[in-house]
Length: 466
Ligand code: GLN
Image (cartoon, rainbow, N blue to C red; front, top):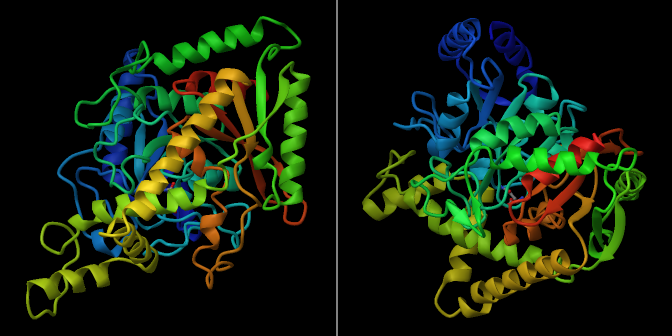
């Protein structure tokens, strides 16, 4: 633990950590040593991890990378934090991210951008950029992230590591700073699918303190052990056919995921990855997800609408930053919010408030919900009739340079094209490394998308590929 802390501190240049905790980390490490010596150690005993700074932690600040929460200390731990601690993992501290998880490049942090360990001038991806950068730089074995519209998969792809967003409702949102509650889902980032399994399985399971946590659905009990059992069963099934372990697996490739937005080097890497999967016995099927392009407007109505509601709690009274100068209560609130929130957060609140306002609700919010339902149906049709998993790119290109999109605040929104529809549908999906760019030798991610509750199978498939 001491050397892990030293390593984390030696890479301050990455700006991945917002807080490193020596005392608590070393105390946890001593406990893990005792457990390991006694022969009764939990599965993750002594494994160094760190948490995205949107998971609340008792005793440590939780900032959501916002000036609004710069001094906020929660009186309790998020369920994800306590479950990983119970599993023996040792948290080194808190990781930088986009402010309130809004962004795709980790440039929206009030505490400065995170740098990509492969190239310091490049973004690490967002919003869980600190998580992906810390794993890629070898500072931790695993890190927690959250994915509302791609924020686990996208930074994992751009930093050359692996990440999984499970089925919505699998992992508790209790103690996770809310962005878009109907979309937010936590997931781990690590180098390899096997490590993701070790982290995701104990993280998952029903939690009565999250109203959208799943207890029992379609005959499936949401409890720790489910994903591992599914992984083991899929692995055994994949192994059955010897040299063609994936024989019988139908991989759907949506034609809308190979569009004009996709850079040629990313398209090539995905094509080669598909050939590898075919050589392992999988069968490739061309499919269509016709509403893919509509996922951008639908998501950027629904997510800001939910954000504007969730962020109304930061009023200068109950939480976080309070302005020093004000005439009356209304001005205290408006100044506190103007000073505490960054530009991107204010932009989302304004969009969200507008689409929910009287007279516009039907035209925007209701319409977006209709599109969301169609997107769900498109996926269900594909899984029912054509394929077992869906494979495609995660991002249209390799990581951009820090500052590239500074003058075009919505350019990043368009780059979410391959991740948003999955989030709107609540499906599990992951990103695994599949090559490097030809212009800039930066990592490229491959996206594996499954039907509800097939995290174990996705991880087994990733394991075969890796
Ligand atoms: N880029 C998307 C957004 O800014 C997704 C972010 C996320 O998944 N948290 O909303």
